[in-house]
Length: 399
Image (cartoon, rainbow, N blue to C red; front, side, top):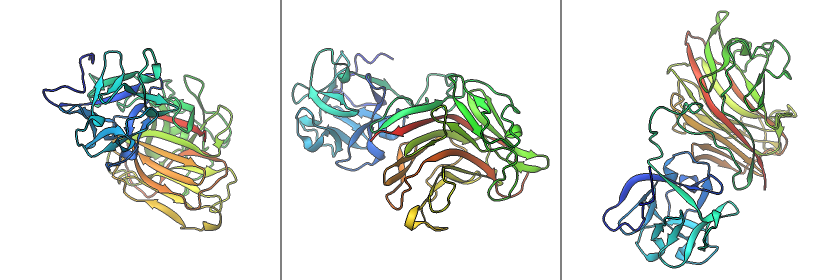
């Protein structure tokens, strides 16, 4: 849909259709940080995901609104270099905007435009031809015009590109099919069992490894495949017992490990009631010393329930059961969700879609870890269903 006529100062009526606002220089979307609907909350650029924190509307008074609040410079001060925030809507001139035909978003308070500056949206003097001041506004981004595009079964595109403080290093959209059996691994954990369309490399726990609760063998040979744009875990009984799998990517093509990082995956389960299957997608220490070197688990929980998460403390705070917990974050495994672990020096955050569900600075580990999509068994039953992963994406900490 053409947006040349969308003017934020439309006098007649509110533009009620939600719209995303994407930077033409970075591809990131204008986002109400952490989805916190509170006066003074900062605005950031973030991977586009169609969550409420990125759905903007306009009102007759020219304000741009998200989650019930209005966009303005910090403190309402109109000055070049000023960052942006949300604030209680008052309709003052500092909250009034216009989308110009050249793709700039201009303040009615003066010759100031919204610009991407070092990964952050800020006020800047309007300058013709400045690419960092160009924005693409897309109406109704949560409603696709038809069937999901190939490679995007969940309706949300795989995020790529750097984020503020994070350097993008790995992504897999699972566009190269691999039949059941191609991930087979009897007892060689270092084998590469899948190579993606762009050379992405994966390992998996072999059949001689046992899962956590029932001590049953992992069965990548019978469970894992890639089809129709998803990494598919076909969860069912294999040789008479429930079977899971536990793959892990080589995030730089050589190693599974890094110290600090950001890990996102979009997944769902196709059937309810799969109580004998359990996910604990985790960062596990290279040292193999547990609990002293910590562990991060998100999402975690039985697949017939809702997602949770655990931060197992490291160092002097470690013990069995010493942890911070995100319980029942409101995500049913049968719905598509994006689960993100964001690990930086002295801090761990878990995000469900764009909402922070755990934020801790307690006893955060500082040694290298690997990412395991651990999907295992915990109980008995005859469920037969699929856990589907639309995409995964990984960033390195960039300070």
